[in-house]
Length: 240
Ligand code: PGA
Image 1 (cartoon, rainbow, N blue to C red):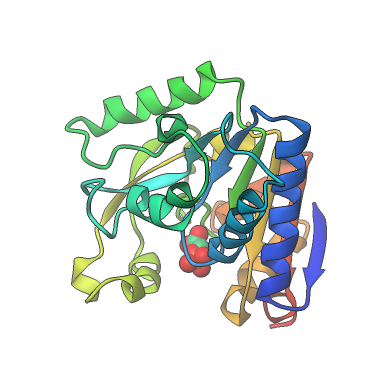
Image 2: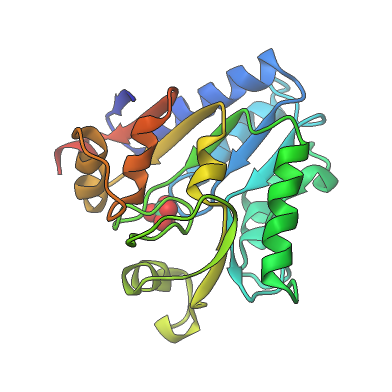
């Protein structure tokens, strides 16, 4: 795992955006794996600026998002589909038909997960996957557990994630209890992964990424088995 240690959040956003921009310039039809949460917002802002300056072009880009609450309507302002439209897709020249987010309103969650995996498999595969990391070490909504699941699946959110995400809702009670998420296997198949971590509250999870151990109690540690992962973190996350 390569480490890029940044002074602060702005530098994380800049470095992350530069890596994605480089990939998009090298491969105009590249396939991006995208993440929600507060961490990638600055990076998306930077990508929007680059698109407006005509440095990067999204017209041939395809995206697959990591996860979505379940059940939730895509029109709900708390849905990850809505988040992606607001924070990136509405502001760049991407064709929304080429942006995929698991469908939180699918009647049959299991069928939706299978279809999502099939779509990723039938594409040329994800070139760069963007990840945040949960305080508890989750990636996507792969929560700490005895077992981790390889493919896209329906999962229950842990109490720590519900509490962490409550800040986006009027109250904790409104946070959905379930989500559809790419599995660890879906994530590991990406050719390249960038993981962004900012702030003191990510310190413990970041330290677990940098020791020599794998544990399902910190799902992000599975990334140590991937040949091309860049951890982009700030001093607050690194030093604690
Ligand atoms: P955050 O979430 O970027 O809002 O901290 C990260 C995550 O839970 O994966």
